[in-house]
Length: 453
Image (tube, rainbow, N blue to C red; front, side, top):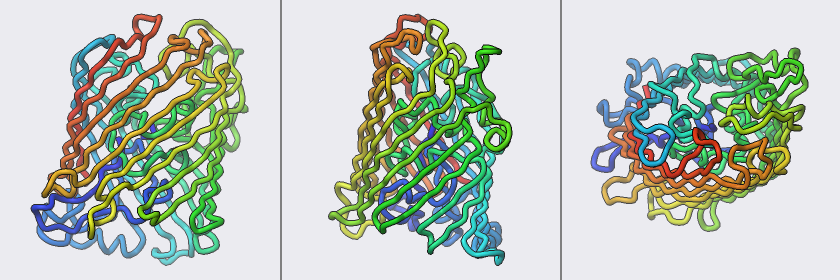
């Protein structure tokens, strides 16, 4: 929406550094903070060890030691600004330049470290997004070709606020509040940096998943019955895609509403999702495999009012349901390298009944290589190929029986631990009977700049 992939905060091998890496195997459970895959960055606590800027993980450093003292007391404040300088070329409805941006500031409080009570975490996330023109008008694709601005919606909001409590030494976690569901569900790989949203979720769940920028009130039950197995269940306010035939309108937008739409003001539309996730640490390298199910209850949004390109016709549609699976596997890692370096593969598949969903099935696969070039151990290269097949029902999609094809490649250059510049190239093809929705073959060249502050 789900969300720019996380920027791995490490530094250039030519400079002395203390690289910031995500601990553990490449599993969705590895994420620690509440930024989903479509949020711009994974944000560890800032460090000012060594000489700024080469070993500080944030532009503003350690604030004279205050940031470290706050972190030791359980309070972590992080922020990231991402700007995409994108040029659309080729056969697209509109070509030219567009500059989406996203500012994300988050606060996490560990209640045990703060001296309050054991097992709690309080999380707040503020986001502001915008752009110089409508990205969706230029390339009206299904997935959302720019994950920080997927539906060309300007907004300023408190996008997440939740409380999570851990039981049984962390084997069971309960989360309640306004949540980005793509943090814990339908994640193909936790450290992706692709621009296109196809990297972060199957197309069959893209319309209904309560993720950035449509986070929603709800709850999650996150269990770990075995050391290598996660079992998860979530239920969220699904009213963004609820259609009221008496008024002919859909909504309200969960992203700009609080938890009331889940607890006491819901029209009868919820989004449910469950997942089993198996992880392995050394076989001989880490990986994961998951299987999931989702369902949108109530009548879906009337197609002409949904947040995908408006198709032909008017029809009420019963809420979609479907299945999905994803995997990741580290294929090679240099001897003695830090976690995250080396070559990794990932993929994802999803299916949904074509009478209930504009997208019937999708498949995505690719790989990343951190440290591809000698002397550039912090840089990351990536390649992804994805395809979404649309329903044959004309009233659900302007491209019945057709599909959307996406190819993307990038090379992320970490100039400092807190500054990344990422050249990125996408190709998108989506034939449509509606001229304003037809993408004959669009090329999108993007230069992404991410700054952790």
